[in-house]
Image (cartoon, rainbow, N blue to C red; front, side):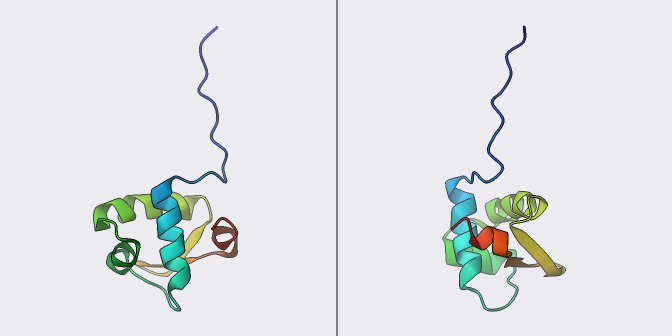
Amino acid sequence: MACRKKAKDPKELDEIQKRILKALAEFTEPAGCKEIAEKAGLPTPKVTGKLRGLKNRGFVESPVKGKYVITAEGKSLI
């Protein structure tokens, strides 16, 4: 029998994802990757990659191309 990788809890976030959500929660309007990275103290490329996953999971949305906001579900995780 093959070993199976334990499924990750869909609500589980890594430290970088948490920092991104916390930073996004502080903005009053949609923010770009560079702004989020500066507020979270992270490199922009890392934020860009993580935002894609957060968006796919419904924790952030992009109401304007290249700008992001945290969703109610994302807020419930921080």
